[in-house]
Length: 308
Image (cartoon, rainbow, N blue to C red; front, side):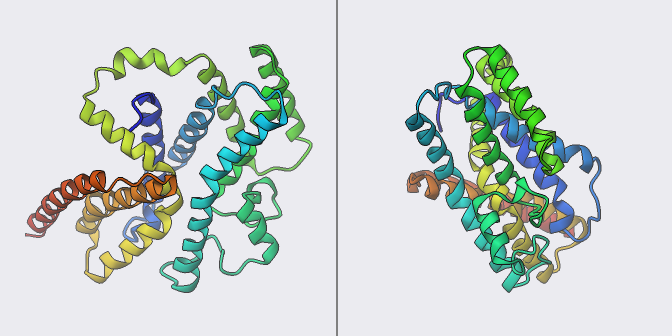
């Protein structure tokens, strides 16, 4: 992985994606009706994503001409849209046609106008479009990237950035956006200032003491987090269906979900992200595969012991 990346960013992304999975556990494990502190975990997890997304934008601090703006937005779009569109298709197939679980996003029944809005990521900008529970973050972050350009383009100092951010926030109240836009915009702005001040680097004296093996795990989880966010719905729904078929329920089913299904999902999403980035390393994948086979065998052994 990139040795220049801040481990603090990887930790925050890892925490964020685990909060997302934690909150959605009742969706993929029918024996759980609710999870404790879900209402707190949702904003905490997504705040980690919004904060880290804007924190890493600090190197893009010059939008003096249209070419730089175009380059920035195209780079963001190439990073976001291909996997996002693939995820939408997977939702339609898994929930709409195969009906593995209830289609909570209603992606198989909405009209063409709604489809266009969702495919462009504009569904989160208007109350007129149907909500997309698992994917709404994409529409919000795309919107914030555009706002970031406006904020930085007309700013020559930290004060200008603060002024522009406040003016945009006030202007947003002239239009009816979903509440999540207003809620996470300040988090996104906080990430901008933190990134420019390199605030997370101040934790380096502490994070540098974390063993390399642990930071590598955070690095892989963080790298996979975007794909996990997009595909955890279809993947875990399929796995939960398979688990139910084999009678894995109760504590054993939950143990299997957490110790086997979730790691498989992360491995699969890591590969998906590698393919999307055009850098799937077969040798690296083999090391993952053999390491995971050993881990899987241990997990299955624990499951058998638990049954006894």
